[in-house]
Length: 98
Image (cartoon, rainbow, N blue to C red):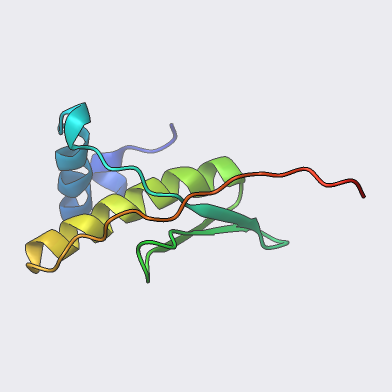
């Protein structure tokens, strides 16, 4: 990965990401995200977490940024004493003759 997280990101972001990474697997929650090709970039959102979005140059970068955005968003909600959204959305891919 290019860059150095402790120099490229503010300390509060690095600390929040590290807190999320240290959590045991049983404490993890899965959220469905949608990644859309926006033409000149990719954009993502989580239907269960309104207001949490990310964008990047590739789908892979956008996925990584969305994971970070969700971790920060959930941490912010926790710090503010707000409820953490429960995941309800599921996604599937279907094939239809065209």
